[in-house]
Length: 181
Image 1 (spheres, helix red, strand yellow):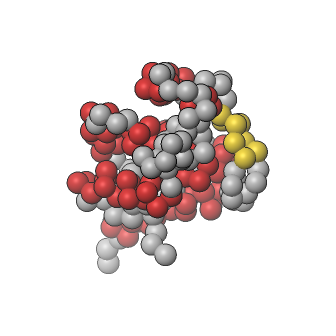
Image 2: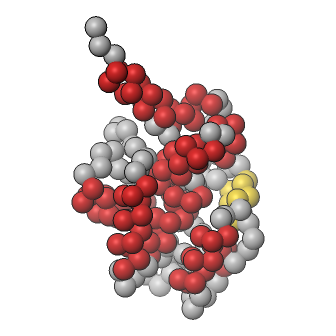
């Protein structure tokens, strides 16, 4: 199994968002923005429907853990996403497959989308968990609140969360880069 990395560079994130927003179909933009702003697993993002965005909290039952979760999205992000889907019916999937009438996008397709939107940046270790890890990485870098992030991710220990978002590896890399005999 290949290790999946977060996108650490905020300039790359901003550029990806800009490029995706310029596309006629905003599906990939919505996928990317939701993923980096809520920290859900891809399996919990894909079942979201347009009407879910209209509620003050996103309510999900995590597929992996079966735990129920309520999440308050940043209001600016929520308003932006709502403006992109304002003409769509509430029961329509937010990230809809182009095949079928109203089917959610599949995991294998999200992987292909992630690989295609990041290929120009020569990023290593990109996959479906990249969005979740990007959320966690930047949440931690901004807040240094590992306890809250651990709760958001339902991890057993802070160490697991730090390793998951790549902070442990960053620390190792910095230490070994400076070390010299």
